[in-house]
Length: 377
Image 1: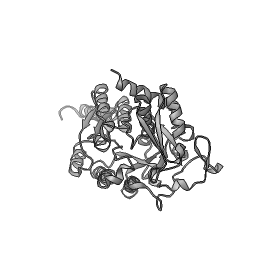
Image 2 (image 1 turned 120 degrees about the vertical axis):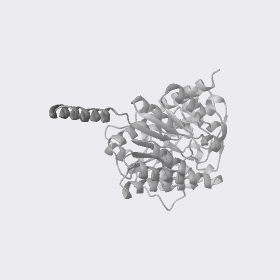
Image 3 (image 1 turned 90 degrees about the horizontal axis):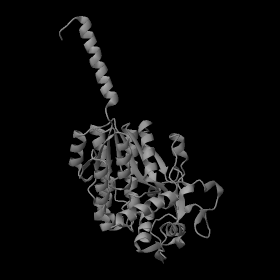
Image 4 (image 1 turned 45 degrees about the horizontal axis):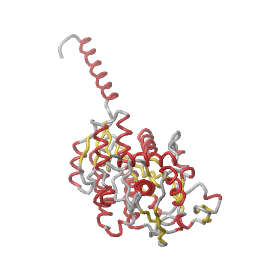
């Protein structure tokens, strides 16, 4: 370097300052798997609005699982239209070499793993696909992260089905339109202390549990920043819902489009708590800012956003101003929950300031509005 010692020192200082400024202003990068799905597409929008570079992986296998109802191409087209900077990649998470190559060549600060085979009914007829996607695909991502991107944070969209049907052992009382917890101490809902074994999970629940435990282990064993979000009913207007998956959005689709609907067991009084995809993404943002290692959280709408099947039908008929054609099927889905409300105490304690912001009626109105926009001439 030419010049006097003072000039060289000033240049060196300016260079260091420039590098520091570049590091401070460098955009963060997100990878979303299942990017054209419900949580994935909301994550793409959420973090893009914050100025992140966003990469998405999705090969539209949801269409393969559920037929035309599950096709996510409409949602991918919306993302590409709204967010020209978004980068989409058609990669199968079961493709281990492909995932390894992608992670080696692309840097990520945060990984949101939302790709899955999500139906506990479908898993019974396609057990290898279910396990290879849910368990094998998750392991592929974790190992690629450990090898190439160990500083990244990893948020896994798990499921309340990791508890199997153990929540059904809680004493219940039958009310006019729903099942309810009989004891006052249970009214807060299911906590993370609920056992995960010695119950019926469905094959889907078992494959997601395998992935859930692996995400925890990569956090604890390899000291990586990982969490499992054990979702109740995650919902929203971007859901490509089908009969086998997507309770509220599929019910709304049947009301709006005049389809026939089937209610399976429990007198139609089974209860779920529902959380909008946007609130899930806000929580993941908090996790990135204050990462944990190998922790698990139940995430749902809590008691205020809980609804039974009968109650949801009545609400949607009122919102859509249409009557639903439906029938009752006596046999419940194997391993299904009778009453499930997520206890959000741990989430609120570990991530102060976060809470559910979208109320149930607003979710339903949004779902109906987008369904009508999609079917309008």
